[in-house]
Image (tube, rainbow over all chains, first blue to last red; front, side, top):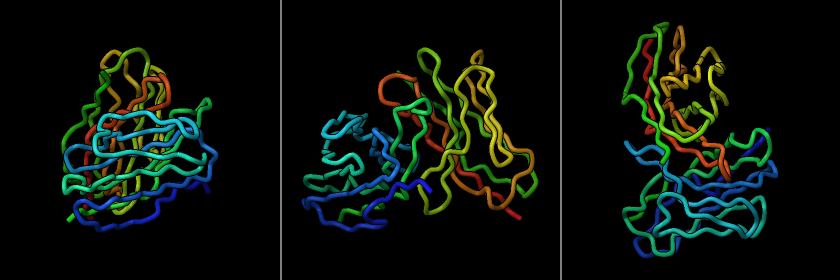
Length: 114
Length: 113
């Protein structure tokens, strides 16, 4: 069974902390994505990566950075967490093949910043 | 830019009722269209998709038809079950670049016995 896993289901951090959210996929997918999900706003794309060490900004990259050192792993970094980054964070991956558009999602990390 | 508009929820139905969740889109070219479902406490799962005009996607009793003339992709099910209670997201991909998706805001469906 194909799988996207995220390092934590729930995370509580303090304002100003550096936060790492990890995502791993076992499908050998080229593309990986980070979204945040907020009530009434749906999913918004933060960053995505189409290859190792490559990254592209999404719709809301401010306050975030990413790292992709290995094909299967994509990390989201909050350099200095703030309360307005309290949210659900979803990771996804997809192939660059003829079914290239289908994305597979992880279970999400609910982050609370106090 | 691309955008997806779907009906606001929650949609509250009794078991075995007919379901429609409306979705319209704005995009350039010929996008692919998707419905994703999110069950409580879980990530999103692909429910169905359609990649060209007049295609019908179907899965688990749900259906949606890609209507280019009305730029719509409405989700329907003839008889909902309590287990269908979830949040449903309509999304599109404009086939460019790296298969990024544009999502609607989601519609919560609550089905009571």
